[in-house]
Length: 379
Ligand code: CAA
Ligand code: FAD
Image (cartoon, rainbow, N blue to C red; front, side, top):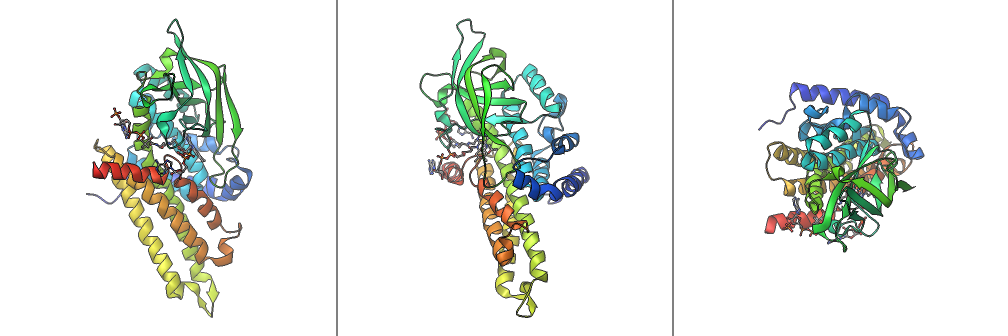
């Protein structure tokens, strides 16, 4: 067992940390207010190869292991969880192709991302959230077998209006069914495919979240990932791979909140002493430290198990669920430690608290993670 990053990992983390300090931290408040990333940031993230961290080296990506990717996303999230979400959605949208794509599809798809583009993973629909097998977007095979015609609406899709390429899950059966779920690569600008309304969100506001609308949208058969009906398994394996990264983003948010309120506690004087000298404040700080350290270790363990080729669904769910609960508790307490100032936008902790909430919801709510953990533990 090794609890330290190797030299290469330390170098990567340092590069990302510097980028975050220079290009993200100074703009985090503005991006939060405006609900978008600031001009040129995406190019700077892409220039450091951060959009292709999960893409295998033979297809032009960095081919990093999961532990290193998690460390990168943690650093990004310390600066802005919205930016981290947008970048991490590229890994999420890369896994279905890594898992089920043939070499021609991998080359085509990853070439697009490697040209500094965002990607998106489109599973959720207005009537289909936790029950991912009930997707009602239809994919009807054309009579000549050359492709499929997609009809339906996706919602809450990260990078929806910014992505150049999408993995879209649709049903090839008449009635929604796990056995009919099928994954397709769809390029932006495909006739019949439009981006719908953008959501106005509580947190992670720098990320873009939209509807996607498919109206008689023809997708050639070469864009189908894996076999018809294999989409549910592809989606589940993808989410297993990506959930620890939600954990690492959560750890980044929690760590940033913990640090901000610790510094504040040392300088804020009440009753003639720094508030850090009060045992009740120290107790909150100590609890935060334990929770953040523990959450990071569970994220790293899930990533390590993936990197070793072990079965890790249960550990991925544990990592995501625990770290996001920790992020919510720690950010809430960070606001508490800072009192009224914690509640004011002049300080960053209220944003951390708003950003933390979605971590308990997306990539499977924490009720769904508990369901996965219980099923994998009991049966
Ligand atoms: N890996 C491989 N196969 C799996 C699997 C996994 N992790 N989990 C389930 N399966 C297989 C099962 O073995 C089973 O196969 P058979 O029928 O051949 O035996 C099949 O899938 C059905 O499994 P379940 O009976 O367990 O399925 P279910 O209907 O009970 O649903 C669920 C399981 C865990 C609740 C699933 O629906 C789920 O994960 N829901 C949450 C959806 C979700 O996470 N959405 C995230 C959207 S992306 C996002 O949010 C991104 C973002 O924010 C940026
Ligand atoms: P519902 O499934 O309706 O759940 C509502 C409540 O019921 C929750 O508390 C839930 O835990 C509970 N519940 C449901 N079923 C059960 C059960 N069996 N047992 C116990 N409790 C249950 N999706 C994508 O496909 N791609 C994306 O890029 C993406 N990005 C997102 C970004 C944002 C900002 C948001 C808000 C969502 C995003 N999502 C994305 C969708 C996200 O994954 C879903 O919102 C999430 O899976 C929950 O689905 P739902 O919102 O329909 O809630």
